[in-house]
Length: 199
Image 1 (cartoon, rainbow, N blue to C red):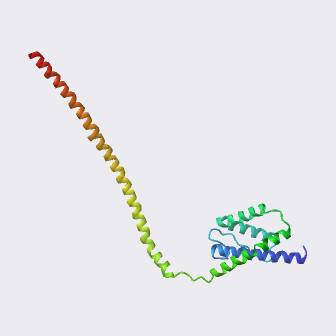
Image 2 (cartoon, helix red, strand yellow):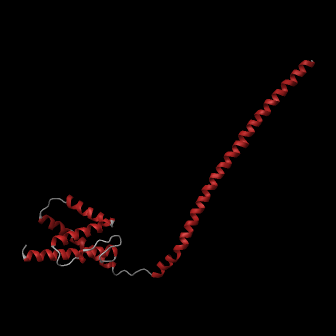
Image 3 (cartoon, rainbow, N blue to C red):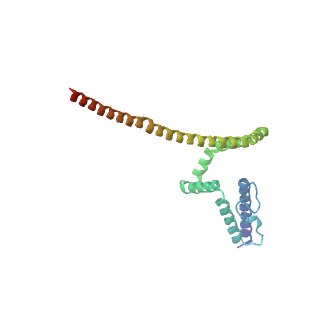
């Protein structure tokens, strides 16, 4: 490999490593050698004496480990790959025309994103008050859950009592009235038979 090509490859790898560190900083708030869920070394720890192939392999490994621990990053990469495969076959002039036609939208979006930096931060006292109320909210949620369980248990007990009352008061009294009616009819028969014998 020529010296120019070798220097170009090294500069390209350095730029990729720097971009990966920026992505790591945006995702985890740090650009150090490890992220919260893995102990894989980052390409920043590789020495200059490493070959281009080994640095590229380390860069790919670190990128894969970064994706494996972050679902939004996986979705972005999948969407970018999908858009690449679904992009129409257009010439450079057509692509340039398409980009230039949407240039005002890019500028408007950039202006809006810049204006976000001028927005004042919310009063920290409000956040502190919410944080202070968090234990009370958790206790209230636990109390509500216990009350719901108690209400469900009371409903079950009420249903059981209603079924028992129906069996004893309604069905039981119906059986009792049926028995009394049968006895009364039997006594009427005996009375009528006795009256017939006397006559």
